[in-house]
Amino acid sequence: MTENPIPVIRTELTDEGVMLLTLNRPERHNAWTLEMELLYNELFDRAEADPRVRAVVLTGAGRSFCPGMDMSVLDGASSGARPWPTDSLPPRTRPMSFPKPVVAAINGACAGIGFNQALMCDIRFAVPEAKFAAAFSARGLVAEDGVAWLLPRIVGYGNAADLLLSSRKITGPEALAMGLVNRLVEPAQLLPAALAYATELARSASPYAMSLIKRQLADDQARTFTESRDSAAALLATAKRAPDYREGVLSFIERRRPEFAGLETEREATREAAREEASA
Image (cartoon, rainbow, N blue to C red):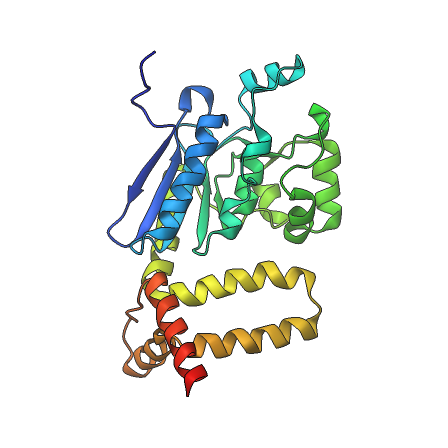
């Protein structure tokens, strides 16, 4: 048995620090496999550890984003086989715990696991022709991967109930109207637009501040307003100890683009500042 020389996910790092991840099974419309899942998590781990990476864009090769699980896996499951070692895999929520911004460029069919992964991204760009489906009820399944928690927070309870109960397909314009996607872009401009957005984040936004904001957005879903306010005060004190705060203020005064350090550099500088304060 020879190893497949074509990776199921392609990677490319731009000069501006944007990692492009492309689901790469176009002959199968980028349907999800165990090999893809393992590599997906590995690539996000690498991107988190790489100080050159400041943002990620996720897209699909060919005409689809990801229509869900590969049919060979579904066929095996329906016959009683258990080819998928779910007990030994981490949750399929890696973009949410990833401390850098993730932008989805949804170029076509987006359903099942593909739908879930798109929801896990921070920002979603899509083409008008993209088809979205939370196709769980039609397979005799429930909403997986925490989607029943996440989807109502993105599109509202009524829209989430509609999509999850019916498994119906919607296209880009309806997805935009309910807030499922942030922007609709014509196919030829989809990837350039998503990369341009991610590049602007990489160039102009503090990686450390973005990591703290991602934490706020996730944690505050379960907090009261007062708890959110108090948590923000504590995080603000942390942010002000970091070099990015000084650079952000100085660049504003000097009317120039900020030159922020990488995330790991900022984290270490903040830890060092905290240690100095504690020993003073």
